[in-house]
Image 1: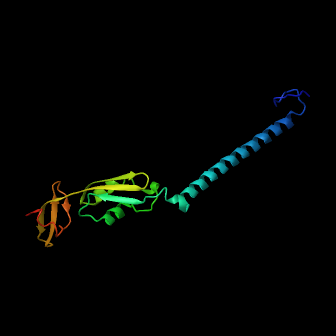
Image 2: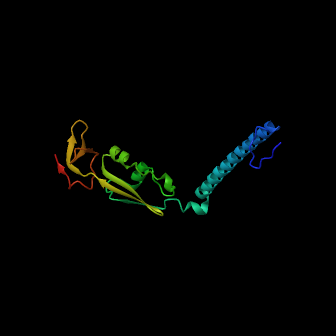
Image 3: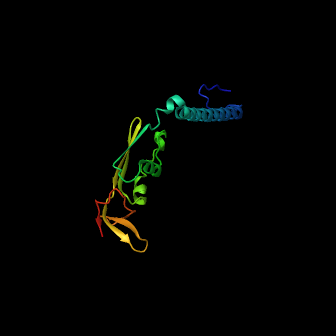
Length: 168
């Protein structure tokens, strides 16, 4: 039998079947070892992420501490934040960036809305509201509504703004 230092299987060897089985077993052990190392790495990353997310001293680093709403005159701040799904103390990756268009389409008083994250602890909500152009009485329900310049029908007018809209 010839000795081969590189682990090659030579045709002249008498125990080449044994060497082939040993090589296959070694490869199988290495495969299980690689899978174990990958699993351990994945679980370590998962545990580290959980620690940084749930650890009380570190939670403050990743959460929204202050929310500023600017430009709202008619819509209450709490109603806007609830509609956006935004609240103080929520994690940064839960802030609903990109949901502004849905809220603008569903709320007739809003003409534009933008949400900006200001690292490290703030979010700013910029609001542009529609203003009534004309006030109209609906004779069937005896209730008032306003029409904006773009044709959007707005809800019943506010009592404090009775002088800034034309009556029709």
